[in-house]
Length: 199
Figure 1 (cartoon, helix red, strand yellow):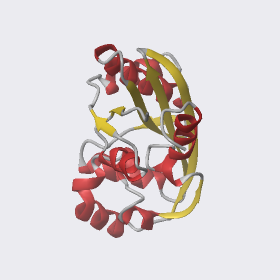
Figure 2 (cartoon, rainbow, N blue to C red):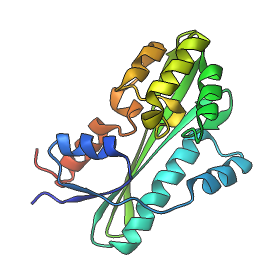
Figure 3 (cartoon, rainbow, N blue to C red):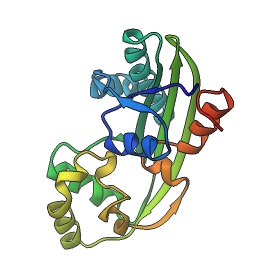
Figure 4 (cartoon, one colour):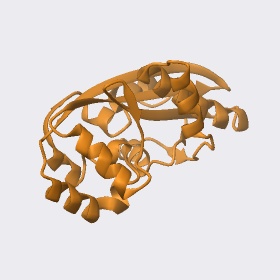
């Protein structure tokens, strides 16, 4: 019998991807202070991969404590560029500063998944993609932010590849689902192998 999945994320795209794949899933965002945790981990010289993994685990664990019988999926995505970690821009000015810095350069998106069952972690996965941004004009960046602010303020790095953000890039290496924040193929493979979903 397929197990329903509890998604510890407020991300509409993650929920849509899981449902499009035919999984029975409910989203219930985990309330953790991501900024504070990220800053603390950075102060301890944690790598971007470690930060993504820790945040995904904390989200899954928070919901698993409240739902001990549930299959809980925690997710996180980190953008790494020149030794710094970037999140979702809080203002238009921050979005412009991030995107200006990425122009003509390559950055990494790291997506982490942690799955809990019976209140304990049973599986984790980490995927990375490399994205090279075009050398965009100032006027295009300004227009892009104005047109897309409602969407890009909810996106790590200030872009959504599934929308106009695709126009920002000249090259991409890596899995499309990793870029969207949910490495779907390894997750489905694991769920099928364990009998959590039918195969």
